[in-house]
Length: 363
Ligand SMILES: C[S@@+](CC[C@H](N)C(=O)[O-])C[C@H]1O[C@@H](n2cnc3c(N)ncnc32)[C@H](O)[C@@H]1O
Ligand SMILES: [Zn+2]
Picture 1 (cartoon, rainbow, N blue to C red):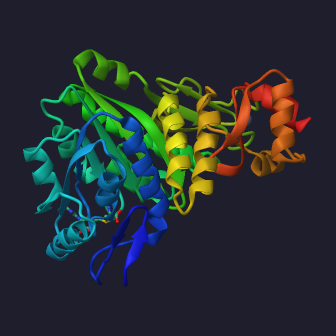
Picture 2 (cartoon, helix red, strand yellow; picture 1 turned 90 degrees about the vertical axis):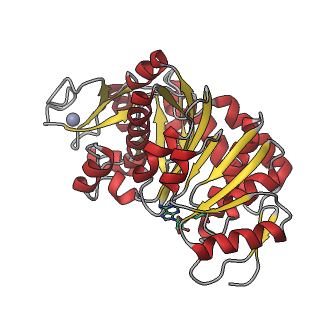
């Protein structure tokens, strides 16, 4: 591959060194989040490949005080060094196993961007905060099929969770990931709180604020629970433990998923700062980023688990629902909060109870 230009860096990625142009937006958003966090961060990109992500984080953000790039491939490390030199970015490039390296070192911001699931690296990533009072953990998972319920056994094995293959499976995926991060951090006396979440194409990326303290860790674990769902009428509810077997709306036996994280997925102030930075930076895909972040801001303000896919709801309830804007308008006029969701272009997020959704949209 010839020279690649992304954000503020220009890199090369020879054959055998991983580089996926489709993840540019993920790296744009990661860089915006790092910039929006402020402070002075020591940052490690623990699976750096060409180094493009970490190099962008440092070159584009003044608050990255130091950068370390790690990879288990010697060719990747040689490429990182070359790319760092070419972009005049001061950093350490280390040939190491991420787990061993994280266990032995300490950072403010840990980036985990592996092939597939980040779970095999999670323990040592949390350990790497060691004596820190606070830190940030950013994880990307590309095993969406597993998290969305196409492979139950793999989800049980990797996340200790039952997935749900339903219309809000992408949100479930992020909440399964978050629940597992919370449960991994808690025994090490860290609370993990999601501050940013994106589900896009084949991946989900979440950033967590970690804070040391047993009380906070317990409070974080108490945010985990289960989701129950009716395949027949789309009824859904959440609870610390599943309470009902049968759907209160239509009487059908429900399915259960979890553990899932039941708390907020975004920090509103962080989103606002990211939106402002996006305007200044003029990334190639800034319009798409603006749309995504604005939608997250709207949906993040609504207390709800999951969303209603209008096609699916109309089909199940044997009715027709005119359009997204119309549906959102009707729900708002009925006194409920309603918005689009970045998880699905044909779905509506609302705080309306299920019976009200059926009444407002399906009758
Ligand atoms: C998906 S790529 C990273 C992509 C990169 N962050 C980017 O944005 O372009 C995963 C990288 O992890 C590396 N890797 C795999 N197992 C590793 C391990 N145990 N420790 C460190 N690096 C590892 C691979 O060599 C590969 O370069
Ligand atoms: Zn039902």
